[in-house]
Image (cartoon, rainbow, N blue to C red; front, side, top):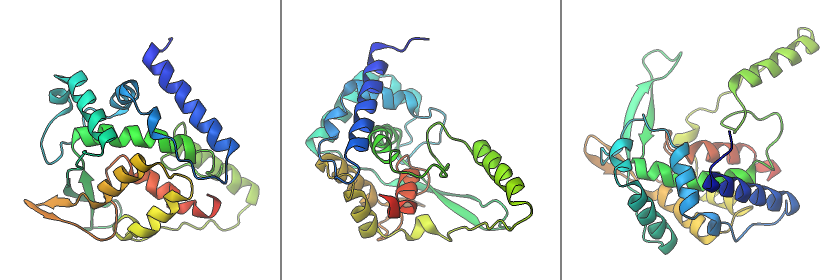
Length: 239
């Protein structure tokens, strides 16, 4: 089915960003945020999950959509002017698979914050996807865990009984150094608006039991930007 004019425009912009990143693999890109316009935000809205849990403002996707165009235009103006204030994420704890009584902290952004994070991720993915290794599958567009399992299965057969090592980084999200992350991002992206937004999300704080804390390290699991920070950090040797 043919895409709408706005979706076609966004796709064209994504292709341009990806092409620029390929042509300039060792250069930090400084002019990226101008691609984020109202059509871009509409695309980000369409890509944002609508049935997720609500953030600190308890606003649902349905409520946000009642004045969608007005909300998106206001969001765009705030992001462009630098006046956007990132609200704290609402922290909940969910059971950690295979870890007995241990839980995993999840940070839930407001719906509007999810839309803006998705808009920024769309830009950054177009840049960083050109640098990630082909063997990387986690949280990448067009890739899935099932594809990774098929690759592992095929390689295991080829290895004919050799060892397979599974490694998990303990408390990676909770201990990620903000300064280290900023330095890694700036190797490829030096657009002022994007860097300001990332910095605001890092400093936004976490609300739990009605109290807001401001961790000096870590990035909340659950936000749209978080998986990308994981991928960028793990692939730093190739960026």
